[in-house]
Length: 225
Image (cartoon, rainbow, N blue to C red; front, side, top):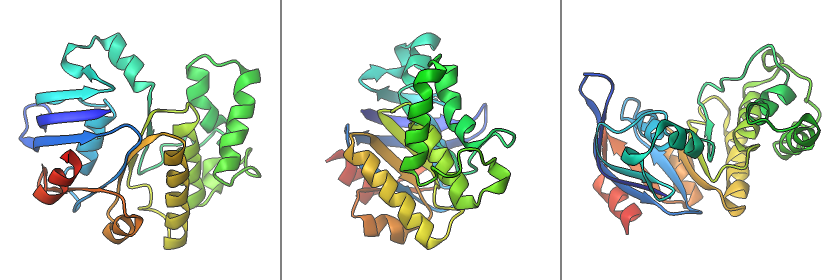
């Protein structure tokens, strides 16, 4: 589903923040991405979620060579990817329901159809009783669950999550991991960045580890095998 070969990335004319990234994520897999702050985790996730393009190297998603795609084709691929942001990025004046409904409304889904989908997603993350709550009235863990519901309501084939456990306690982190496990069992490919290496190791899932913009050799070899 995701294949990078010797990919490098820089912002503008600055120095490279990612160097010679080679990896392959198979459809239906679940990987954790670890590394110290500043190692390049968010930059790699931005490449995988098509928020940025590589500066060099070969990159393909869903079997499509990214260097050959038009803007319209890239936009179509992005609709197959869900993103969970570290800072939630919920719209504060909208209810939990309306935040989750937003991507469906942008896609033109009829209100009569999206209503059941949104309610189902909020129930799935344990917030069926907070449909009308606005983000400022929710705890950090509840906001993160709304963000997850918003990311998966379109049934993406690939989910990218940037430090989803960074703002919650250990109990909530475990709950979020169970949600991701359930989603993976339904066929979604996941890559989850975390600073919590112990949580990642405990999951038993393959690890990608970044150090100074490079994949550490053991993790890179494990993914490519």
